[in-house]
View 1 (cartoon, one colour):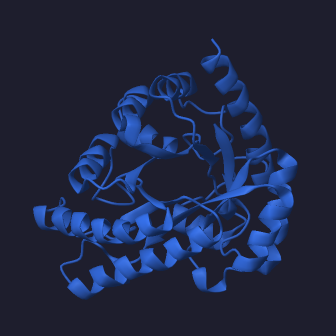
View 2 (cartoon, rainbow, N blue to C red):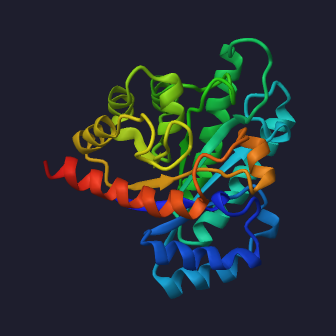
View 3 (spheres, rainbow, N blue to C red):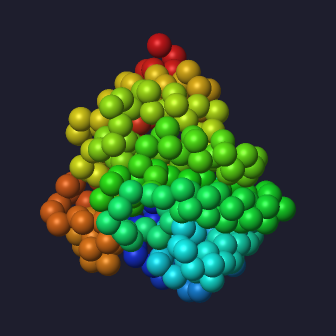
Length: 284
């Protein structure tokens, strides 16, 4: 597998001043960096491209939709906003040599109606993602939907639901993104969740149950890697965590205490643990 690390561990908005993060990622031994495209207007695309080429690194991309870009809104204009936003980000991903845009790309992150999802919302999501995927296909980019925990969305919480959504959309450029942090909350088994995603799994976040250093919590890493081996997963495993020092990110992700000495420690120690776990399980 290829290992990456999330930019929001060090910065809420990736701008020119953050280019040195890419040097750090290379120094730590990662294969690439994941950039969160929450502020695409300020992204120094050309300079990022130059830096990635200079260091022989790759890049993956994630985002979340806001309430003005909600693909499950009854307001058709908001759904169109969401489709156009995804198309804009697909252009960025393609320009920077990426092949996946993942995350909460199916509904407004953190928005709730106080009810369970409806059939109308499900169908609006399918139609909207299919439209965005048609554009993404032209650019060689896959849209990977990430089921997240019940406190962040009511629309897509489990691998089973994500698989159903992807199968019903039935488009080669819509796939699944799983995150072990969310699996820890919503699934009965890490192993079974990954097996459920199966061949549809296109992107993976490898996070500890408390978003601390992978290997220091109670995530069933043996089960995770056993399932990855059995489905033949060879793509990205990205460490995503957040620290209180980045106030905007801490507020959005409810990080109110120090879960590790630093973002650097999460990245370095986490990568060492995960690579060792992969070798142990895959070669065992």
